[in-house]
Image 1 (cartoon, rainbow, N blue to C red):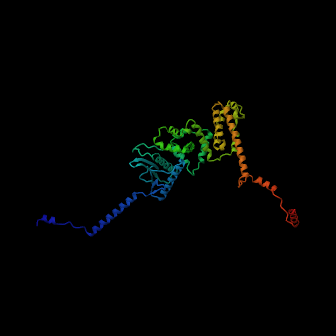
Image 2 (cartoon, rainbow, N blue to C red):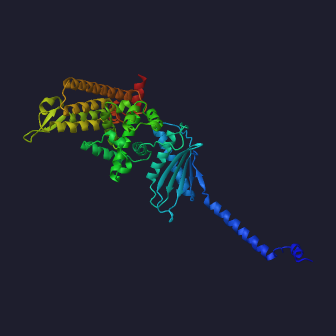
Image 3 (tube, rainbow, N blue to C red):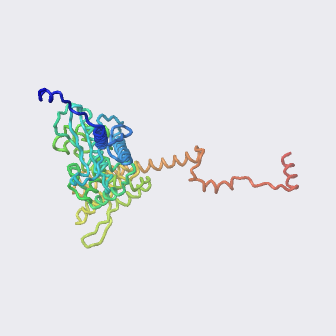
Length: 448
């Protein structure tokens, strides 16, 4: 037989049983390790109660705490704006731990872009030992506001420039959070107010927070809170603030002009007056109670007597109506500027019936400090008349409340308890004696 034929007929030998076992073990280990690697590369996640926040991370407690913080941040925003939850775009929150091969990872980073299905929002946090909850809330609130800005804008093309909420809006809303202690902010504003160095509202609107040092950031936070409060307290303030946020996507390059367009009542021609009043109210509202009508009247009496030193160093008291005399003094206008700040603070604490009177005195002292005396006598007479009316109405109201409590209420407040206690023994009949002779005499008297 030809050798070639023999070669063609020869078969390849099958692997032995040992070789087959080794191959089976190798494939099993390879598949098991590959499956474990695939599972390790996919992070587990938690979803918040409203299902808007999807948190990825390894620690379930950290994921739960982040879900709770995000929900509380959104709840505070909805309360400030007077809205119900109506989110459309979820926010993905990715929690990472420091890695030696990536030392340049940023503590936080917000990624947002337009994809085929709509807006994509992802917030990345680096979880470290000095994890700052306040800064985390700032980034959460920024992302939530971006979702609100583009909630109804589905026609944004991919790669477009996205608008971000201003720093004053984020910080002002965070300062108004429930449970936040505003006493520090009130003290800072009171210091600025006493020094007569209130920042202009334009400076607060245009200020970038990342350019400030820690001490200046605290002052910026306090001013931001006063600005948000001013906008909310304006006519239809919450609705206008919601509209302002929705229009940020098409806002002009001038942020102050855009804000004035949405809030013309308080940021128009008299924006300085309303801004100063908002700062003054906030500086006192967190730490003082509203004064009674009598206490407000006493404060007005004290402020309307102005002590001004003369050229010889002797101090003399003047009434506000004596402006023709003390305006000639070197220290006259400085005393009036200080007095105007006093009236501004009083307006924030005054009894409601005296609040407009305190604000009117604030306007008058500012005008006098600038040397403007036109129609000053008429305005002083009018505000004095308004005060007399307020005092008369206050006395009548007190008399009516005292009469109503003494004669109509079934439950006494205790204000008249001492008077009633003193009067009751005189009105009560003397106690009768119970001996035998007295009982006999009483029975004869009753039969007559």
